[in-house]
Image (cartoon, rainbow, N blue to C red; front, side, top):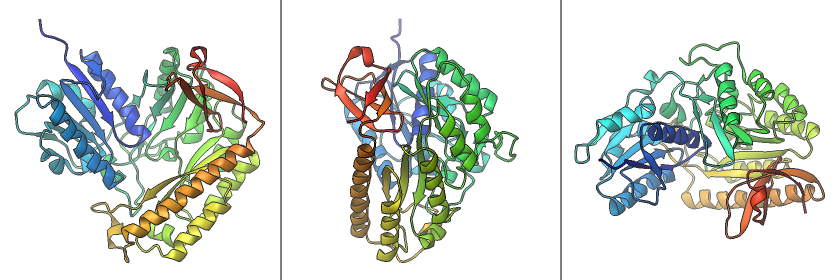
Length: 426
């Protein structure tokens, strides 16, 4: 009798990738595979890649080398954004057996049945224009929170970004299907919080072909999710400022299930740089969004994405960004150092900012982020907030997040695992 085949996964990048990896895992487990930890030996290794920065590409290559040393006879499958953008480059990495582009990742079961170690690397990809349809994905059994994908692809043309080339046109699930997924997640009995994910979440409502805007939109989606029994908390993973309407903010402010927490990409506090980036707003609109959120929800957490070292960013432009962020009532920053990506318009913009300057600016904003989070936590001192604790014992400690995204660490108590607890902020 043949032994059960084993598979291990590693995910690079965003919450959307995590939701898709979890779905691929369930597909293979349903086909008879046993899931193993990535550090263990397995028959098949699947790496779901990101390609937002150069580091993600390098990390993929390092992971393949690590597998080669540990389990040279195992099959290695690469999928995700890097696989769609540079399939030939990946196929030339020693040890890679299969490269699955955006249209083929969810056909992994079929591809593995046809794959033998030692054959030449198989590439299954297509032009991104041919990628249509929506594949439902959500994470389950991996953690207290579930990442539920409701939208994919992007129709924006930001000059620094490869995501439209890697994921195709903006397209969405239907509200009916999303509600069914939420009910199924609730029925599992383990999940207290759903994080809604997508590439351009606020653009929810485009049909599966990416061409037609339906009658559905993001506000209608969250209103109906709010009524689902069995899910206690929702978060919106990230939403563009131009798509974060006043109506969405007002709804979250009065909802008992949608957490007082927004993550809103800014990218730059300089209107000049926002124009070079081809962003669809100016900083005044961003300020209006933050002011309305804080007016309606004074203790709401606001996270911000920002890119430093974009081509043409002078010291004055960076100071404008720093000062703007310093003045805003925000809680934390995700700081990205600009990284040149092939086939993007940003490559044509001059002058290029030296790497050492990019790194200095990154450090400066990371320090600002630390101070912002410290101040936000102090503002909450004395308040009672709800905390959802994770089911992980880390050296005798456990962690969780308040409704407004303050991380709490406390000695491990089994009865608090995967439980929402009232907590007084110190």
